[in-house]
Length: 257
Image 1 (spheres, rainbow, N blue to C red):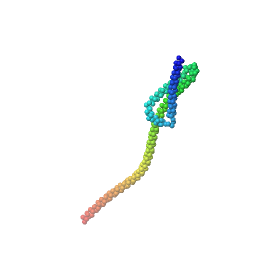
Image 2: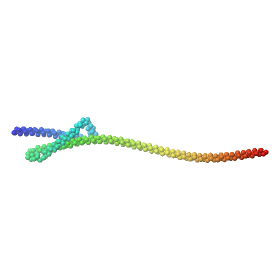
Image 3: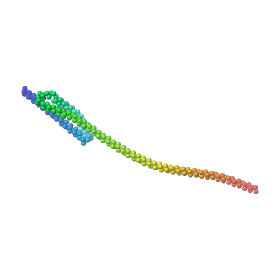
Image 4: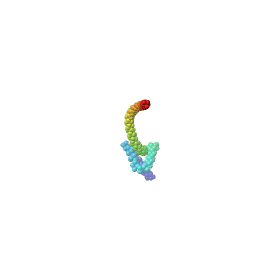
């Protein structure tokens, strides 16, 4: 009986040691995963690396090759971390409950062992909780970096378009000013030409008026000459009549003789 009890106790102790080693390796891996997450988040938050640089890094071919597996890996890690977190919560609840404290009161030698297990359970809770939190934060950070890079590229394109539009508007404004200046100069030239034409028209009007007066005078002179010619013709006819009468008188006197 004593030998069998010793063998059973040895087997139980070996199983506990194996379980302890397994749990230690498991939580060591989670701790290293947490450290890697902290390092990656710190690198992603470096201020002098721009979002466009990160976008170019995320555009490498290796990420395109890993894209089909990324979502599966992401959700798998979430499920694993949630399970580990719930297991750590269970362990904390287990070793902080009333039953372990009752055993400690019965056997004071278990006090350090229970508190050590409670400390490990709380440590595992923090490790798994922060790992899960940083895993989600890292995914969100990568998404926001891509969105910021796209926004910066779009804003750069919009800024270039705006600069082009402003340049074109300024060019149109300069052209409008030149056109207005040309129109103003042309208007001034036309005004000067109109003034000259007005003066010329006034001179021509004066000349026409003078010509009309000269024509009226000419018409008056012509009429006077016509009247004079008519009077002369009448006088000539009268003289011819008198002459013919005198001729007739002279011829009658000669016949009487």
